[in-house]
Length: 380
Image (cartoon, rainbow, N blue to C red; front, side, top):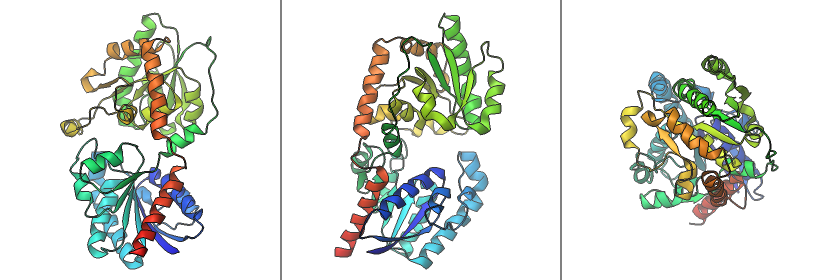
């Protein structure tokens, strides 16, 4: 079975998923796969020649998107034209829904018989739930990376979906188990975010929380995991701390997470990463001025994936005006000891790992589902 797959991605995370998917395709014995479309370094290493550098469209945040909108629109039309000229057997969208779905809508009108698969479900469970139903017009199947997403899509009238697993869950499960000595001085990991705006909004409150904990008599080492390009920003924020924190690179999170006892984190995917590593945590998030007016559009009861995956409150989260040192410190104090709060989180993290467990790696499972869709299409 010789098939051409056209990838539409918009950022580095899509490149990594695309690379895993290509590895999965290459392991299917009766599939002769050829690739085209957009790619990052990992996919290019596997033979995909990218139509253009995805850095051109890899922007995050409302303001950044507005500034690059003319370029993004031009790239959308360029990708659509390329797909029409190549007429692939399957189009695979990976994440970046504002870009990839703009392509899919236009291609569906021009090539209605070419199947389109969406790898990573847009967060319709969090906001803009109406997108699920409109997706049916141009998405044939969704490959979900969170276990609750197929159910949510069905409830919202969206396209059929299959849970294929999360690459982070497989990665953490494969790591050797490490345990810190019980007598070791506690280590508090501070994660202020991966973008400069997040760091500027979150680190002052996190720093005040660390100082408050010390003032209350807690003896611990503070460790900050920093994105290398933002290390100087973090050093500027922490210059006034009475005890300087240890700053490590976020590029070695596996080792860092294995060597800490608890965490104070900016809400995001890192909360799921901490949960899979079994690190009890407290989280907070302050929206920027541009995003705050849209906060009322969020429909989910929690912003944290560990809570949503098991559908109960495991990890405390404070949002906007409630990101206060006193509140954060009180939550953290409960996690310094082997008491009910810490044990409740650790038990909850076991449930998260069980819910996300799959028998095969996500890329392999995703490739199998796509191959089956093509076989079913050919037999009709």
